[in-house]
Amino acid sequence: MLAFSTCWNNSRHTDGESMIDEILDLGFSVIELSHGMTIAKLPGIRKAYRAGKFTCSGLHNYFPSPVEVMIDAPDAYEYTSHRASDRKRAMDMTLKTLELAAEFNAGYIVLHMGSTPLNPKKFTKPLTEQVAAGQQHEPRFIKQKIEFIKKREKLSALYYRRAIEALEELAPKAEEYQIKLAVESRSRFEDMPNEREMVKLQEHFKDHPWIGYWHDFGHVQLKHNLGLLDHEAWLETISPHLIGGHVHDVEWPARDHRTPFTGSLNYSALLTHFPANCPLIWELSPSQKSEEIQSSLKIWKQKFPERC
Image (tube, rainbow, N blue to C red; front, side, top):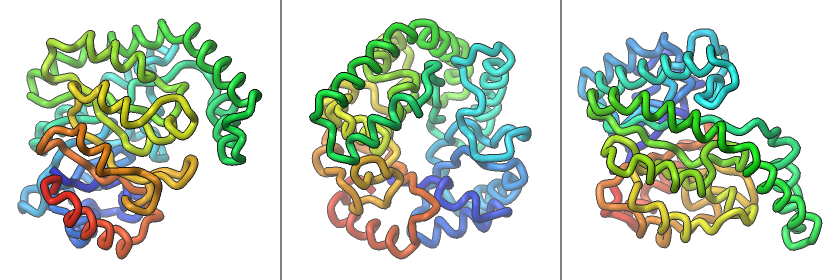
């Protein structure tokens, strides 16, 4: 199933129906309703949906955005937060997202599980800057990366446990609504879960059919570019738990959410790990031009007709 995320044009519209219409004009009929959506757009989205204009593949938590958050901030509230009030708000907003997912007959909601208390400006950012400068094989880079991994390992247990507890609380509602909870791969190593934790998390819920893994092509490629994993090997490992994926490209080393075929990703190799009819959602930056998207969509349909 090929679909398109509203993250591309959400910020350009005040009316939900016009937002949907612009995506339909690109050549997509299946749409993922993404985070950052103001509640004011819901009437227009509902109108378009009830008119049969689009099919909803899924929702990206939180949908709609918390009314008190003035910007697109899907991580404003985290299940891993040290603040109990933030954890409760995260749960309440997720339950609302599940309710709306059922209304739109969606198959899944994509979840960010939270983070460890490490500042990316001290870890991911300087490592990325060194890679951009071609210094990824120098001893300083390797030393900093190993220190980063060790530091995160010492901190992670509490935040992993909170993520597990959140999913255990949400699982009965997911089963009630028949909507899958798709735990997304993140772009920063500070985030929860990392790959080792993701495997552990999926094994924890292996007997629960409503919890699985959501693969973000760009996020994982950023970690690949930092030498934290091998993209294709990771997909081979995690593929038994796949629910779907966010498709976008990456300009070396860390500019993601680019239009497919404009960056460095080898989709032909990566897609072999996805089951048939798996949701593949183009999740693009608002900076990407309509003409380029339509051109790439033609290439996609030629190269991967079975993935449309």
